[in-house]
Length: 393
Image 1 (spheres, rainbow, N blue to C red):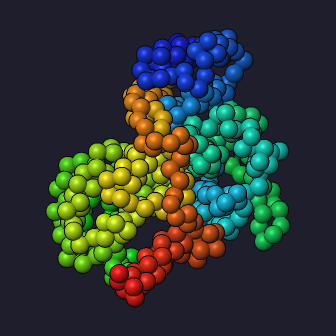
Image 2 (tube, helix red, strand yellow):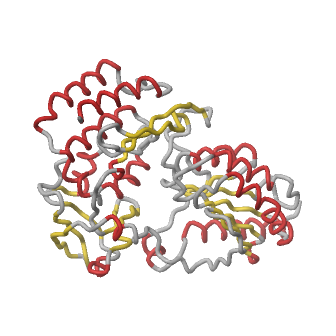
Image 3 (tube, rainbow, N blue to C red):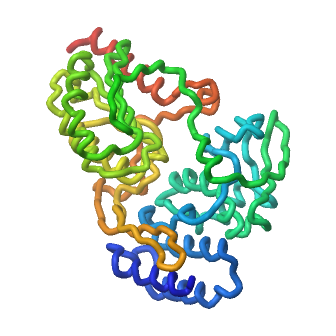
């Protein structure tokens, strides 16, 4: 049955991907498919799925991916986040909360660097080094991914190696259910700056006014439906207008995408607010979690809102195949996506949107509940505004 599903995936990619063989020659792709089908008798299910991930990864864009989480699976009980080159535990089930803040240095016999080298050909939802790190930090929690890639010798047990209080420790960890893992997040409670959002019943988009900085702040965390944005447009515009804001910050960090026409509708909603400083006062924050439609909207806002990009490089390539057709495997009912459109969002070749003002949140700030990136941006805005007040001409 796997042979039938894999052959079908081969056909789907050729029929539906807008440019499937930009990064791998068709003959080579076909050879890899045939090799996988011939090796099926020697592979367990986890190995088959990870090998399918390798096939999809060879296409080279994040929207062409195999969702290993769409079938039965379990997780190791941590959420990880990169701070520079260090991978930190930012959440854990109750049994392992003493590891919060610990640095992961390896799994089983592999160091973190070796894990990155071994898994780079398998991790899906990747377009550049930034989305690789972002996606890797999640995939290493998936039990059958580690097992299928040969990192673990057992399906539900692995030895995780950490640095705790400057000392290395190794702990044999059992996997937990998807339901228990789903309770974990990647955000500490952010205490600074103190943001009080207006009461909008709209998922994914929150608005606040930061009076000290004369700045309206839109946390664009995920994408609502277009009709939801349209229904709230007048309220958003009125709140910003009544606040007297001169600056606007739109935050796309950790937004992995949706319908970019919703983002365009938001820009249309606010574009008549003449009180805003449209020359220097519009900022968009991005990071490695800014992907798909969020990256698209960030690039569009640079142009149509004259926005300054702030933060760290996006996890999405601005000039690559995008949007998706979604399919389910006939026999195993796994989910796959295949890119169907192509956009050029920047004129110059680039693997990411790079910020005009690089700013990051350090581990020390994150641990203390400080949004270092936003605080640095607000300080920049405040300093610029004071300079303008002193030198109005």
